Image 1 (cartoon, rainbow, N blue to C red):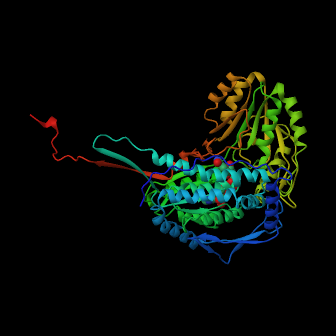
Image 2: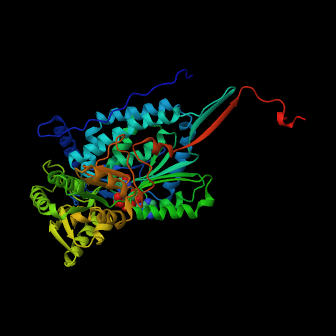
Length: 543
Ligand code: NAD
């Protein structure tokens, strides 16, 4: 029986805790970190509500202490991919019939659990497994994740309320069905909240999911599953497998009931997946929805009217927080010649105060990069830059040490070549390249920014001059899906700056807004006629 049309609790963004010395949250998170650090946990796959263990395991080690084992996870093979698909299809039968208020309640309950008893578990797991400092963990694993949970409920009702017009004797309705089949979520290592949202956004709309997380985010995956289970998510709605990506994709992208992909990761992987889906198009019952948020080559442009300290702070936070491993991280900057000496002085003075090390020591602004492959790729890049003496110069950093953890100094490169490879390719690490432009060549610089890289994710302009801001907004209208005026290009907040880019940065389906949820429904229009016609003849047929 359902005799009401309910409103949902009005969502607010979760307040970010400070973790200042002596604050209660700092003690709680560090205690939890220590607990996790000094024991070894077992992480099975999770299929149809069951924990699945196999004979093959892999160790989990923190990036900042890669010889220290904190747990192991169980790896699956093709039989596990198949049983995850079957579990998702089976659970779909009840889940899509579940009244939306009940689905919403589960996610609202999860939000409260995460804001309360799970907050420090999720933060500590993210600090250890993904090497985030406490503040970076808090804004991601706690606050952004809570915001996704609460706002998705609001967006669901906004979508459901959107109904067509009716006329006398006719009632038109729109039913927002989940997609027919199952959703495949492939998630990146760098945001716990994104990994969770790629599953919960389709799930809240009534879909069921096969989730393959990154091998480097499995510790926090375990806490996400514990949280959702405790909030009452039925078995089989989200199924987690730790399987080899190519083999997994081969099975899933050949499946008749594959209904949609929710992907975040690199552009190269997304393009190869899109091609596979295209070539398998005759195998599917429906045209699959393909949603992917991918790489970036995000920029900061300063005009000579900008404030030097504001630019410097944005460069440091934008480029080096979480070791530059944010898709939105500033990795190229365009600075005016007249201000460069002062900016450089301030930048280097500030960079010298940055400490790098374990997230357990809260005085460390930076921690380790995610894994050995990334460390090798980034350090090879630094070695190459050091050789390219005639076009590029490292003016700060450039040192690294991978003996205990994968630590790389914040590195600033100055280049004379506006399209030097570090100005166009995504490096995904703590390397920022700066190009100095002649003040009178501001317009030319706008064209360079627009055409140097294939990406269009985030960008920022610093200026006090309104007409310069207006011109920049227009000229760079296709260069970034998230554009910032006098702010760093990172740190998008759910419901405030819906996130996503175009060109090679993805399908721009704006995580953290109703636009993303719309991709997970297939609307059915229903027309009901209260006065059906009884004669086929129209008046015009009369003599
Ligand atoms: P990645 O592309 O290496 O991996 C992402 C996921 O894809 C992982 O789960 C991985 O196992 C899987 N994968 C890899 N090869 C695959 C294949 N052939 N078939 C199917 N799955 C495959 O990315 P990453 O290193 O985890 O994350 C960093 C990347 O993600 C960066 O490029 C970053 O810009 C991007 N990113 C983008 C956004 C955004 O919103 N635009 C947000 C976060 C990260």
